[in-house]
Structures are given as structure tokens and as C-alpha cells.
Image (cartoon, rainbow, N blue to C red):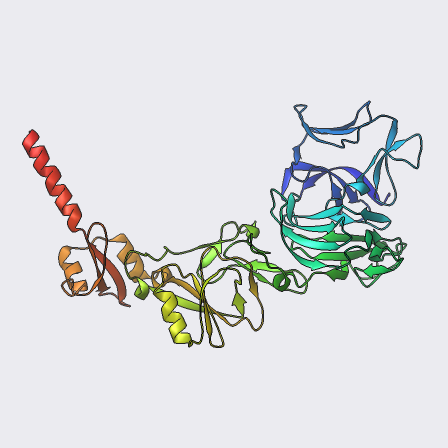
Length: 452
């Protein structure tokens, strides 16, 4: 069986849609190393055609074009899948291919492949979603090799989190036949990207910009070892510190807004802070949303919110206020009383207020203590559900507010009073007395009476 194949493979998470792909064929995993239409998978019945003018064209069952090689020009004699994983449109001059997949990589490079100045790899969204994602490895035209996190749609570079720092001297990224991945420099020296190499004779190899933004080199034994199941093994990587090294003024950071990056030796993950949940559990890069109602700025609701502690967590670019020197109790009080404060960070004798949306979140030793604001009502115990689902008589509200004794604030339609519901446990509430609404109802009644 040949090592590489070119053809259609179903998406891992949706077998009704297909990728036109190059994949390692001689292993059970059928690992994809290149795809033509990751952003636009096609349904069953689609086909790829080598046209008379020498282009590859992918069409859906209705004949609509989904992708083309766009190589242009004539002279193509045939298409071929080479033993090194490169799919080519060959010409009569075998040393001058009209088009080849090695020149248009997706997220992976293979032994014998090179990326010249101006080339890039793009991570896919998730392990099972091959759409172009949020990270890029770029061989810049200035000679620097850089990892960026980017806008998924426009590909705008938000900020970098790793670089070779070889401006003016870098030439090309090379994955040589011996299994070494390095950045070739003008003075005939190299910048080693990964430190290990293994025999191409004994292992399948690939270097991939993974969905979490880390560039990793993997190997897979070509022959089965006695009593062991073959699998891809990690032998080298760069930018595993992405959680702590990335920061930019724009964008959400490595993870989505209101989430934070949790470093892991095998795969960095994105998590939600306490009181928040993911918009989409399957697409965590979309960020997190509060599981509670935002604090009102019209009245003082500070007693209806609490601060949950999260050690060594921070969102460095979400500050809007800082206090120093200050103690933790003062920091807590200032955040609870401020309707704009979503999080307070207390570190040593300093306090930072953070606003939504939170960005560039990370878990990192020494970052201090994050105080996450959420509502005490959010606990959803039986007494709280009772309050949410029932109506109250005027007398009950009068008793709860001690005859409307403590005023919290004034709004457009009346006064808001502090109250305590007689439940177990007792629950603090805000009660609004709608004076203006009563006046408007009375006026409407009088108007109707005059017109009848």
C-alpha cells in the first residue's frame, strides 16, 4: 500500500461532508496533511476534475465550483501523488511542475518540504473542524519566523507569541529528509525549530500547527512493535508557552473573550471563570458569557453580588482603574460597589478593576488573586426559585422592606428599597415602588372617562 493518497475523506464530526485531501494512507488513522476545501466541505456526489487547460477543479453535485488550483497556463500532462506527500500537476518538463500542494500548505509540512519567504501555515479550528483557525506560522519577507494569533475571518495579525528573531537573515523553513525542522539563514547556519530528528525510513513524520497554536513535530512507526499499538508521538515543539507569552491590545487573546488559557504540557485549553459558561462547548474559542444578570448602575445592588476567588488568574489588557497602596478588603469593596467592575485583581498591595469583555486571560503563577463578580441569586436553590416564580402581596413587600425604610436609589419611575425575604436562607432583594407608573395609569383612566 502506498504511503500517501489523494482523494475524498469524510469530516470526522460530519460524515455527510467531505474534504478533498492528501492523507497518510498506510495507517488506520488516515491522517490528513493537506486539504483543498477545509473552509468549504462538499457533500457526497462532488467530484474533482483535471481540466483541459491544466487546472484542478472541485465541484459539488450541482456543478458549482468549490475550489480550484488556479495554477493557470497550459502544458500540464498529468496529475500525480508523489511518495513524499506532494500532489503535483506535472508538465513535460518533469523538473517544472505547474502546481504542487507543497507550495500551498494548510496546517502541516512534511519531510523534504520547504516554506519560502512569504509562506504561512494556518491552524485549523479544532481537531475535527478543518476550517482555517486563529493561529498562523509565517515565514516573513523580512527574514523572521513568527507565530501569531489572528482574526479568523480577516487573518489580521493581533499579536505574536513566538519568533526566531532573525530579521534580515532568515531564508526558508526546512523539514529535511532526516527529520530535522529548522530555519535556514543567509550565512549558511540554521535556527533549529525542533531539537530532535528520527529516521524517515522507520517513521512517518509531520510538523503541524495545532488548533491550540503550538507548532509540534510528530512521528508514527511504520512497522508495528510487538505488543504495542502504534500511534502518533510528539518529539518536538515550539511555543508551548502561548498562554503566557501572547498579549495584544486588540482581540480576545489565545482564548475567547471572558475566558482564560490554561497551560498544559500536551495541549493548552480554554476555560471559563467562575459564574461563566461557554457560548459553544464545541467551539470554545468563541468565549464565555455570564450566567447572571449584569449589575444595575441605576441603584446600589452591591449587596446582591459576591466575589469568587480564582488564584493566579488575570486578564492583563482589561484594566480601567488601579489603586495602590490598598488592602484586599478595600479592593473587594470598590469592585462590588462599581457596576462596571466585572473582576478585580489583587496582587501585593495593588488592585486592578477589569471591565467586560475580558481579554488575554491566562492562568499563570504569580499573577495574584482574581476576584470574579457574580450574583448570589445565581445559586438557584429552592428558596431562590420560589422568589423567581411567585407573586408577592403589597403587605409582604412592606414587611420585607421594613415599611420601605432603607432607600437604595431612585429611577425614572420610582424609588428602589432594600428588602430581605423571609426564606431559608434569607435572600436580599431590591424592591422598586413604581410611583410614576401609578400616575400614568390614573391619567390614562381619566382620559378614557372624559372620552366615553
